[in-house]
Length: 269
Image (cartoon, rainbow, N blue to C red):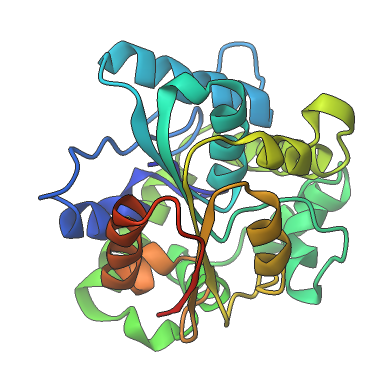
């Protein structure tokens, strides 16, 4: 299970719990995120993250695997599924960050973080924010209904944010990964993500939140038409992280994917 930009393996704990009887989940921290150290060569490209996940799968010696990816992790998972079909039994993508050159206003601050100079200016502006304020802002961006994260869940999220802010490489990992993700949108030829999506052989579950502020849910149509063996789940009340907001809906969609892998259809969550 591969997290998105600025996320960590903790983003998958609820879905992993829902699927505990179905799969032996491995929750991956990409290089520079969560508990993983930054890459020694400073390469945060989608291809580098892809190689890191490939290495994890090969080290487990349990492939082919059921591969999950959210947001940037969805781009990583798509590339890996196209390049190494022998390692991927099925693909589940939750709000995958596949190229969409129509930049939404809500995404502009994240995009600017990837721009040298502008990104540093934004970071300077945010230095006076507390971890709690940053966490609240992140939840408002990610969730369809931010009010569902309160009490102990919010306290734990803020504590994790505080821990990560103390890491000397945290902002480098975020800004360089942001630039790499933007760069992947402009790749052409065999490296183009949409072309790679069309080459995926594994049955694919696509999950989109109708309240997503980062990935336009209208991209679901193109994705469903591009992945050769795709099943679509649209979650009306969900934002960008359906595996956190509606883990039961995602788990149900995954089980149905395995049961009817060759039957394309659409499900409302």
